[in-house]
Image 1 (cartoon, rainbow, N blue to C red):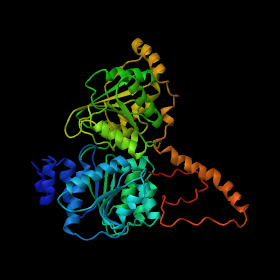
Image 2 (image 1 turned 60 degrees about the vertical axis):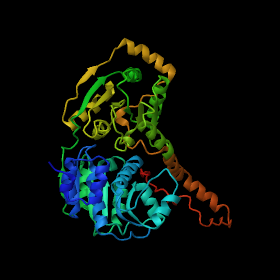
Image 3 (image 1 turned 120 degrees about the horizontal axis):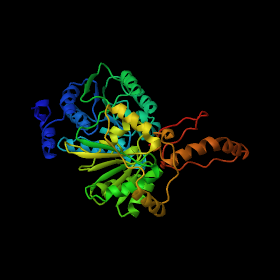
Image 4 (image 1 turned 45 degrees about the horizontal axis):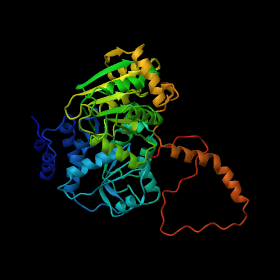
Length: 463
């Protein structure tokens, strides 16, 4: 049986792994670590919860330690791009835990927080930087970060990058990287667009695949409950009447839906909080910390958290609304049954979601056991009570939902103001004649300068 010591890892890493209780490498780790240690490019495909982070973090740390040298000013030796703040934080925490005996620096940069501390950390150079694409591009635009000295480039959860519209920013970042670098792509699925991107950036990669694309963890007990859309909330409360739902993640399609479901659960006596793109970083961190500490039974999340939540002992995952991207189903339910444990995934399916269920079953190549809870008189009565506690939200056709719904609304408003107000503001400025411009304040940085919005209506991902 393969042990971590058989993979050629250094003693400081083996010591850190022993302290964390890691005994045997997972399949993706056993196959990927030797390849990365050799300096080769790698394309890794593995379902969520299989240990992809350690598969690239461990050999990267060893390579950096073996060739120890100062990181470039405002730069970093290794760059890891992550689609969400939560996932970036999780990856950085793992890097720090593995590097505890190695003296290597690890930092994260992402949106939703002040620039000052991030700029200070970047100034002296960093061994490993974990970043979201939007905030990294902001720093690059302000010359507070440079990627030209990057030796190892990692793209984690590449398929979610595609879902969130980050492919163009990734190409822009990669264009400024040195050609003499190691590239590592890791993803749970490999859609054609990501395959095309991998072909552009990887050089003679070794492909490691430990599971077919879009497969689900075998230890997850999956089931579908057919239910009318207006009766989902009382059905959810009925499930939480079972004490075995001790640590449950509930997924919705929209941010407003997540807030309303959390509000309803609290009104029904179930401790819950919501997490999504419109929450501040502090709100997201507090909600996640309370959920990890067991202070509440339910965390209601949108897909932005599907791969950014690494919580032990999640007993259940409930798809309150089915995702309109089939692969997202795999990542959602992958929050349970982690580290070899069992888990249960329950999906509510209204009549207008049947096409989404069909797509999910086709993508995962399985038929999920289903149960019909429609026309339940008890739920009908409970639905009336639920509407009094929290009025029902306006119904939205799930087929018209945008997978990028987690873009913070304040960012959308900024873009809309730029588009609609740009010409008017220009006319006002021309009418002021020779009015003097206010002198810029010295040594004050309040965020990156935004370029004028293009005439064409295009969606720009920011984090």
